[in-house]
Length: 317
Image (cartoon, rainbow, N blue to C red; front, top):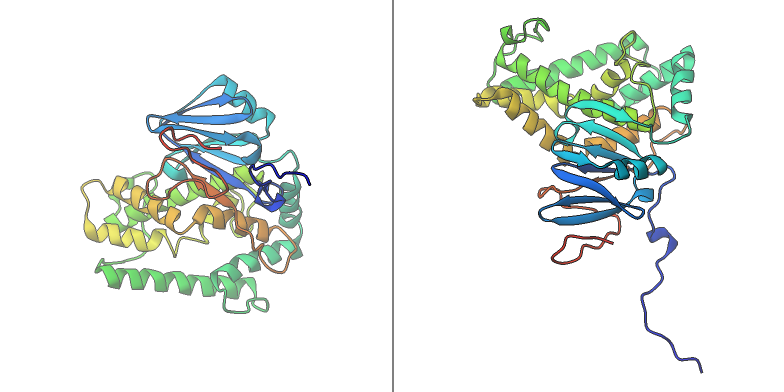
């Protein structure tokens, strides 16, 4: 009889990182990023974490990150998209290399933009996300716009009443930002944060920010399309709340509030999920959301996808 040798149980295949159609976003800030063998390392005074490059799809670099040449060499070889943003993606600065060497989503986006029937199909899907409990398939584009206008006006009215902030309509001058009232300033600040995250996700997926469906003719048309899906939930209520609180630094307060709300509501994951659904022929959204991992964030915790952290060092395996 053969004696059994004790050891670690071999992991099941479904316990290993799943790349394929699943995307892993990792956000890093205030750390030094380098390389050890085939792993990306992120070092901070709390310790060092090792991230297998092959298990990462998108690396989002926030404030205070320093990246070594060796790390970028590994990142490039592994086909990882790198995006430079403000805190938690609230500002989009630049990106390098799309998520995949394939251009499937970009080609599908271009095909649907240039085909009237498919273009309208995507627009209907966008409105379906706004009205999940209704059938909008029979409504004309003009009727859909009217429904959306009524919905947004109602959100403004409810927020104004809840926070006792007067609302006289969206009124701001891009050339003279300071001339606006506090709530309009807060709306512009909050929307800018949402645009930044949408731009980062679109770049990571390899889509074009300029090929929009509801918005057209601007180099960020698709960015506006995607951001608009979440304004009623995130930025409009926050703008009225911040205007009512009258903070000393309105911009900073709005930016941090929107950042925290986007993290709490998993907006990044939902954007990935929604964009993929909008540009696919499937009748229903993909049930598997993107796996977004935020490191060095005491509010969110760390990795949920099978990483073990060693006591004392902060290393993981």
